Length: 111
Length: 114
Image (cartoon, rainbow over all chains, first blue to last red; front, side, top):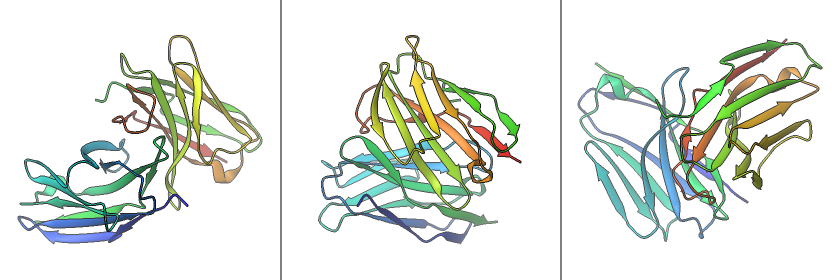
């Protein structure tokens, strides 16, 4: 079935350290993998995405890596700051139509 | 601000009632998606419309229906409401038809069923 697993569910890191969130997906045909950040009571906000024709994409302190063989992709945040505290969702496209989300990771940056 | 608007922001209603949630996509976007976010279920895809036509269906209950109008705004109708329907309802929009296009979310409608 269409499934995206996300780990960990909660993550606390010291300010300035790196954070890594991992997701696995079930459909080998999936070809689009976005990441969303959601602050409390607000809308999910697209922060970075990757398509299956690349293995890594970087945008300032945020990077995403994709391993299509293992059906695995990860979000890396470096030099974390207090404003990075939020819930992060990974997602994968199934059947070229439906975006299925992971269960979310609550990231807390400790000052 | 994503450019996607949703009304109302909050809605409180009783069990058995019917409500309508409204969404206006970003200028130029033809696709509208509806999602339900509850504490124990995460973000669940409900339904997608592209240029007025239903494009994809997710875990949408039979009591729920949606449509997209010629001006591209969309409405999600929830009827015979139950306590378990209490959730945040988001719409998102994108330029294209398939899910591989970037989706931008609106601010959401918080529905409370009492």
